[in-house]
Image (cartoon, rainbow, N blue to C red; front, side, top):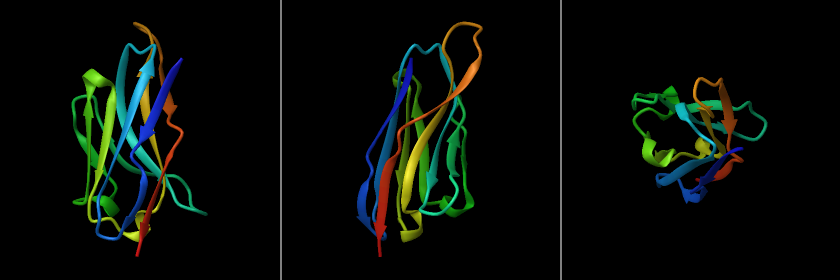
Length: 121
């Protein structure tokens, strides 16, 4: 089995910073893209940032210049550093990873359980 475990959410005032991490564990041969999504109350889940296996990041327009995604391939971990947080950044943040479990195996998408981020005004 493969598990993604997130940590680092919490409550912060507007303008503050938070860092999230997500570690993948279990039977893993290779991890391709990893990413962070968020879901605000009453809204659809949206992509916040993604990162390729070679470290290229991609960001939603709403977080460009404020959030930074990174990964440590040796630790099968993806990070999201969030600065200059706004109340509209509030939501449950989920990590996602495209994982190959065995050599020449298929790629499957896995999700973490989510971590709450609340930004107060």
